[in-house]
Image 1 (tube, rainbow, N blue to C red):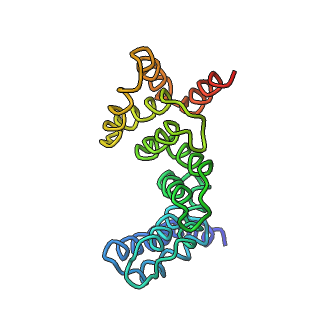
Image 2: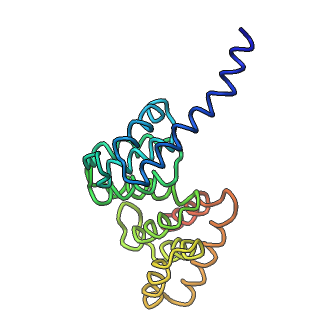
Image 3: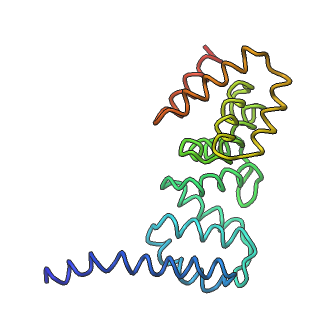
Length: 204
């Protein structure tokens, strides 16, 4: 009996990986039905990567799976709650646009912030735009510039354009403050703490 249990412990993760790999291969080839058949059992068991790709299946028009934003949001949400950065980013976009969910700037900012804390460049750029416009978060060009500085450092080219437009509106002192904030937020484990500390200075 012990040997049987030990064998399951060893083989089960391999079976999970095999099903996931087959699902992703089918997804990349555009075989939506096959991808869903492979990924759904894993997603239902709580595998965050499988949940994320199911969300993508329903979000995009993959052959054999009808586009369904509500189902997409459902699976992105399940993966996002487990800390899946890409799912958090996609879910933020859905709350921003109102696809599959009621539009909600606060929730969009929340999920982009969580993804940004994990280093997701696009989420940091988008969150910066939310701070620049005061949508769902306090309005602050300094925070916006800091976030987009970090996004650009992560390889997001759109962030560089966004930074240039803000530099026209900001003083040299404000840009320096934003750069210091970006440095503080870039330290390991300090993204949220440094961001919150600066937000508190806006509403003392």
